[in-house]
Amino acid sequence: MRCLVTGGAGFIGSNLVDELLNLDHEVIVIDNESSSAHEKFYWNENATNYKYDICKYDTIRHLFTDIDIVFHLAAESRIQSTIHDPAYALTVNTIGTCNILQASREGGVKRVIYSSTSAAYGLRNTPPLRESMPRDCLNPYSISKCAGEDLCKMYTDLYGLETVTFRYFNVYGNRQPLRGQYAPVVGLFMRQKAAGLPMTIMGSGTQRRDFTNVSDVVAANILAANLENKRPVGQLINIGTGKNYSVVELAELIGGEYTFVPPRPAEAKVSLADNTKAKSLLNWDPKIELEDWLRNE
Image 1: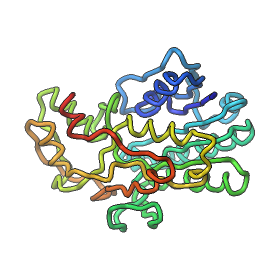
Image 2 (image 1 turned 60 degrees about the vertical axis):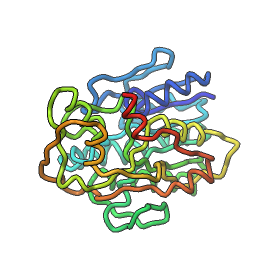
Image 3 (image 1 turned 90 degrees about the vertical axis):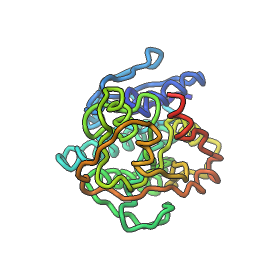
């Protein structure tokens, strides 16, 4: 297949690009290296790479001709940074997503796979979290990503563009962001320990997260790219393990000293996926256990 990956030099995107190339697909990558959480970006020289901004429609449009699958991962993805600059988050995550969908529609793309977030569930829903539960957006990040979900559904219903939307739960693993105070917690703790610093736990540390390995996320994307399987089209699908850990438990698994700092605003207390839909529609099952991964690092 001919595939296009937005955000393909970042954390999840670069892992996906590598696997697509390993499977002998042709891959085009768009990434503007805007993420402040990455110390480096991962451009695979076997892909066709473009340092483009998805917010500039006329710049990216020509890349979407004769593409089978678009994997849309480019985003402003740190919750706290979107609180500081909500307009930028809405521009990248909502207008940028509309640009990807419109370019896909005009270019004749067969399917778009959109990466959304479990932050959509907020505080009002009792875990395990199911796709049928109401949204509860607490911050500009979740609002902007959920607007992208609505755009995907609209492009499927109105224009017939096949879309599949994933809600990821706390992704970690190879090439995870390590930079800055808002890096995802697994990478942040590992960086702090390596530097001989105590791990900084926000609030009480009793908040619980469903930590999902990037290799399992990549596997879900590749399964969703199977054009013969129409069942996931137009669907919202959780990608999480169905098991969670408190932040204190995570720190103890990593091992070392930790300290407590004030909690961050507008974040959910507990994330835990009901992944029944992913299993039934995609035959997807997470393979990597957090404890096993940490033991081998």
